[in-house]
Length: 239
Ligand code: BJW
Ligand code: ZN
Image (cartoon, rainbow, N blue to C red; front, side, top):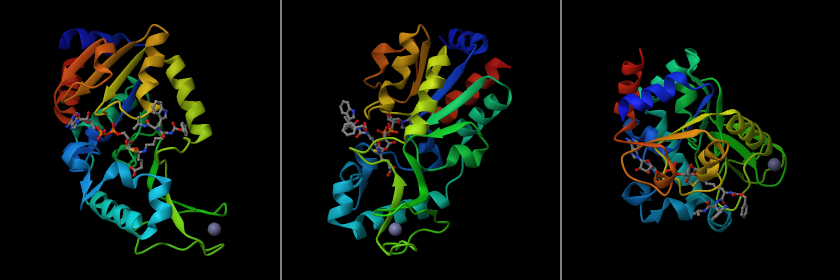
C-alpha cells in the first residue's frame, strides 16, 4: 500500500493537498469534534455561528482569544514541514486548508488557500473595515472606523466562503490529478466535497487520518495514522 502511494505521489502531474484540524493536532491545537471540541461547557460547533456572535459576542470573543493565546504558543509539526518541502521540490502544487491557525504559512508554505479564514484577521460587523490582531483579543475589539463590534474574519456556519479564494480553489482542483486529504473529518461542506471534484475528473484521492471518515469509502488510498508520522515517512520513501 505504502509503495503504491509513493508511486502515485512520485508520478503525479499536479498534486494538491486539503488539510483539516487533524494536521495541527500534533502541534497541540485542539480539533473541533469529539471531546477536543469542547471549551468550558460549549461545543465549538455552537460557537462558530453568526447567531452565537449576535447573541453573545463577549462569549464568542473569549473563545477566540483563548484559541489565539493557545495557537501563539504552538509550532508547526513534521506534517506541516513535509508539505513545505514538497512545495519547494515541486511535488505539491498548492495547499487548501480549512484551518485558521496559520501554521502552514508559519511553517513556510506559500501557495496556501485558507478557505475558512484566519484566526488573527478581523472585520467589522457593519462597515468595510478589515484589520489584524497580533496579540490575543481583550473583550470585544471596537471598529476604529465606526465603533461597532469587530469580529474574527473567519467563516462560520451558514456563511459563504470568500468568492475569490473559492474560485482559485476550484481552478486548482480542476487541474489536480492527485488530492492528498490530511486530518479532516470531511464533515463540513463545501470543503468535504473538494476531493470529489478531483475524483470526478479521473484523479486519485489519498487520505491520511487516524480514523475513517465519510470520505474514506470514496478514496483510492487510506493511510491510517498520525499525519506527523505518515508524511515524513512518505517523504523518506520518496527520496
Ligand atoms: C488526525 C489526527 C492526526 C486527529 N493525524 N488525522 C451541504 C450539505 C449539508 C450541509 C451543508 C451543505 N453545504 C453547506 C452546508 C452547511 C454547513 C455544513 O457543512 N454543515 C455541516 C455541519 C453538515 N456549511 C457551511 O455553512 C459553510 N458555508 C457554506 O456552505 O456557504 C454556502 C451556504 C450558505 C448558507 C446556507 C447553505 C450554504 C461554512 C462552513 C464553515 C465552517 N467553519 C468552521 C469554523 C471556522 C472558524 C474557526 O475555526 O473558529 O471551520 S467549523 C470547523 O469545521 C472549522 C473547520 O475548518 C471545519 C472542519 O473541521 P475539520 O478540520 O475537519 O476538523 P475536525 O475536528 O472535524 O476533524 C479532525 C480530523 O482529524 C478527524 O477526522 C480526526 O480523526 C483527524 N485527526 N488527529 C491525522 N494526528
Ligand atoms: Zn466598522
